[in-house]
Length: 612
Image (tube, rainbow, N blue to C red):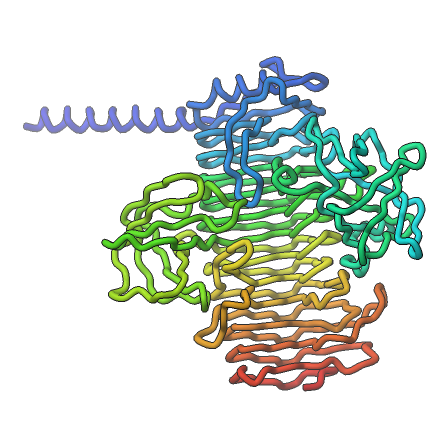
């Protein structure tokens, strides 16, 4: 018996040692210098790179290292797939880095620039796990917008002339309309905004200069000098300003910089995006992502960086951490974190519904999977009235699906209804970032997870931080429940000239939707922030239960013309509101606070420079 037991013990230890050594050596990282595989600066590396990625697709712990240089990508030999990309225009997309089903893969650029010479998505990460992207810059040989310098402006006859840089913005005038050749695709003027080259930001009173592109009349009057007229009731942009034009859907958001979806444990470190025909970073249905030292900025010689947001996260869960990053000169928000409301189109009985994606730029979105918790909401009140879980889901097409729930109310209300996924609600940490000189907002947040926004610098054309949620426009879900916003700096928030606040908390409602049956958002703290302001605005709230505005300092700024038209604090249909210890300095008027009659449990004390 002893001999058998002893042999058994030795045999077990041997098996354990073999398994241990296999784990140790199997887990060793494999570092590949891409230059050993014919990948080098100064030539098109698209095909060779994709072959290399394919060769290691079944391996783990692989790092692809690019010796520093400029690596060029062309669409001719790029892989192509039909891709659904949230908040973008879907379609066939060619890719530079197509990373599908990768595990423990690192792309290390060593400070290189990846230059793209066509309508390509630089990075696609699909169903990846433990993916790291680091130490590189993404740029395009030409941007996805045109920057037109105004050389003459006539307010009397409402015409102006622009100089077109045809190398960076090839163009043609056809039937008195101005078109731009964007890598073989002819785009109309479309969406547009005027920038002030001195501030490198959208011009003050931006909306006065928004041009009606469908009626805009173009005429060549000189050497790449185009006269534009028929601008309706808008003002011609002033001389030396720059008109930015960037097309219209379905072709204006085809090319994000980095697209990550259905992945887990992703890191982005020391990465820059200087141009993209969409968002710099769009992340869908991903669990845990850490973004550090991420730069979105315009390249030398350009005013504008990306066509849309710097960072955008939809339907994620786990931890989203964005820190130590610079986001500037993009044509939309710094960060947006949200879910998606989907419409209930029909009840089939037996807890089964036909539902549909609500926004055309979210077609193909994965709403949920078996086991996910969901809420049923009234679209009239935008409030939930029942929770359940998904037991089955069948996708019919890119818009509609059939979803079966574990249970439903005995009597479904006879009102328009929506579904919201409660499982995929991430926590967000957004700290030590600069979001500045961009069109639109600094940060948008609608998630039921814990949110911490601290030690950031915001200088934005619209709201600094927007906590919204809507069941009417983009259908962005996620009424907040725990938000702390502290120790941030806001400079000249709302230089569009409209009433845009450092903090704006309110659901977006249609005329058919109503408040009064419950509060949408909960537990928002806005504390110890410093605000330099030409308009004296602090916070606006609607349908919030639990709002603390405390210890904030507003200091007058003369960087823009003074606006005194709106209340500094505007509280509407809110409950449990504290306005305590806030200070306004150097304003030559007393800042107004406005409280609606349907707001209650409001505590106001120790504020200096405000009146009620």
